[in-house]
Amino acid sequence: MRYSSQVKPISYLKANAAEVLTDLAERREPMVITQNGEAKAVLQDVASFEETQETLALLKILALGNQDVTAGKVKPAAEIVARLRGKRATA
Image (cartoon, rainbow, N blue to C red):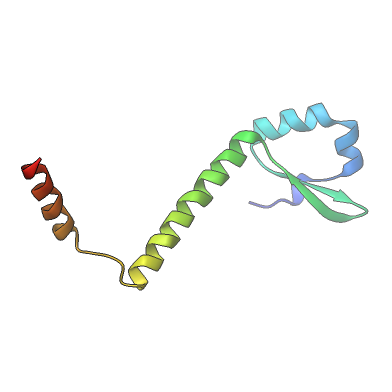
């Protein structure tokens, strides 16, 4: 996704805040806000932000799992299933 079409100065945001929020929700694309010609902030709708946070959380879980595999902190699935079945049989 290219953000060049969604770059606006802060003065535009100040003058058109309601329109900007509506546009963000409809287009679901982030907007880069500039100040004195430099990118200073990124605005996005809440739904997109929540999706991004969920994706980051899942990626973190995967990374932690990969660290466990690399560190040898894993057991074969068959061993775990057998252990669980043994607990269920004794309960």
